[in-house]
Length: 522
Image (tube, rainbow, N blue to C red; front, side):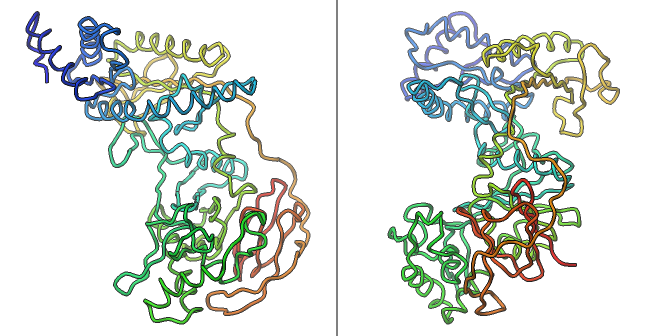
């Protein structure tokens, strides 16, 4: 620690001692985050003092970073953690992305590499900070959900992205994804907003294991390697993928487009050893118990995340999202479901709806707002020039709020106009700017509702359903269905990369976007 009351030689001596101690201990980033009314100025002065005593040829490759240059936040701990997390993540991200960009250049790729961020926007590598890439994958699903909600007029779209290890749950309400004004990274609050996405430890590769006489679903997972027992890669744990193979829902001949061989014998051995034996159940009873437990965990997670009402539509995507979506919806009390046409890769598809944009936030006293606006415009002009655009081509979205306020205190505003009356006497304000270059991104098809036609049946499949026992269901290949195709459950709907069992009392209809809408009979 440095006593800021010191000055002259005493301060320089203390500073040298601290920096030498940090670098000798292996520090590869020095982050400055200070408290006090003039924390921005104090951080910059300290940085200048460090660089005077340690010119870059002495300090080497150890950069000195001011937390307030990354994000301006009146809460010092939040500002410090944001900068520290970013400093920790940035080297690995930077190396990976610049290497990727280099490979693209070797192949004469003409367009810049754009990085999708967790705020739903994209930017070039040089204008991307690591903490903004945290959880950006699930954010792609939220951007896709935003597009679906706008296109179909869904008031409340509950998104359910089920992969191999987790189920990511989010909500788009009145066209806007739910956002935490201050997100969290591993339980640590940061100064940047993040979509309110909950990741639950249940997916296609979640381990099903009996502990103390009770079957538990996850959160442990076999991952992609060794994966479920049926993959034949050495896995011996039971997963829901093994269960769905053995009930007949998954067809080994069509799974993953027929490119992957599944081993029924290994799957059966895993179910018998890990579920049937410990619970003292027969084989088919064990399959039914496992399926019900998996469905219950997903459905309970949806209900815990938000209220379920008549306006709630469930969007099911990810490789495991559509499997038994009607059963999950029924258990959660949801009457309407949409399976996007690109369900297996919907989060990646959602990235296509992003624009190139940069966001900024600075604290200011009321009388300092004009100068802050000038500073933000300067930053934005510089950054958008680096993105390849003149700021005059871009849309500017301004807002102001209480410095420590939540979303309820944020107000749209235009520089040069009076501040909102609600902020009178507010003390310090947060002035925010988002500058956007709209690009030609993915689009959904508009048009009249297609004429209903009976769905084409590709064949039939024998399987075991909870409560119904052994049944034979018609199979509808999604690729063979034209716009307007519909059918009633129970049936199976599948394409190369997902399989869905549509339950009794449900019906599906395929539209012009290749999205499948499910509704429950009244």
